[in-house]
Image (cartoon, rainbow, N blue to C red):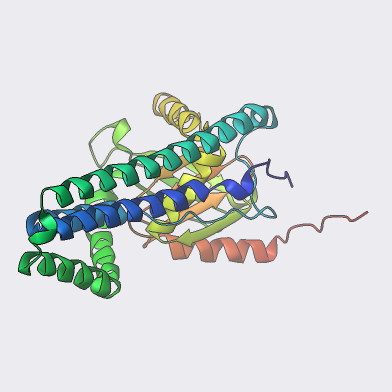
Length: 294
């Protein structure tokens, strides 16, 4: 099995740093709003924060024993160079942003202090403080039901325009309905993938799938460009089967992967369990040959 290149351990670190930076920024802004006693903007901050964090989740770490880059060997040197450039650039951006945010908030607090806001502390300030406390303390109770409701709504709205999978005993037929091929839901583009071409089939929830794809795109910065080109080629020539697909949604996703193929298909509640069961049944009758040891 092809081993992943350097930098694998750092893939996903930028995502975690971004999440911490976002929470840090929210905390700094909340501190200013408490000092100012601004209830309207406090509510606005809570809404904006939830809109941002509804899709944020730490990226899953790739396993060096199972992950294989979905690109030919000759692509690996430029991919590695782009990966390291992205990691260094993101780290610098996050670090400088944190410093600038801290300086800006300190300046605002100093201005408020000079203007005498520390003499105006009263009911409004305590109401804003109580609002933030209530929001953060109750968030674990309602955030999961909210995400489930969004999953149901997104599945109904996006399902006809994403893709579906027809499961067979020896493989699957992927039926694409991407918006780039046309708005009509009945228009579809189909191709077949045999189980013998795949190394893994598994399901994951929407946020995990989003994090996984962010890791994939960070580890292989050429992924999106190559996928876009292949889908455009497939749209013009039905015989040009794409090797890379990412059809993300909020609901359950199905990952089909090998060293040369990578398909992430959303809206998988209906076909995902059947695909996993068929894959496991096929793998039981077609075991992977043991790797000889030296």
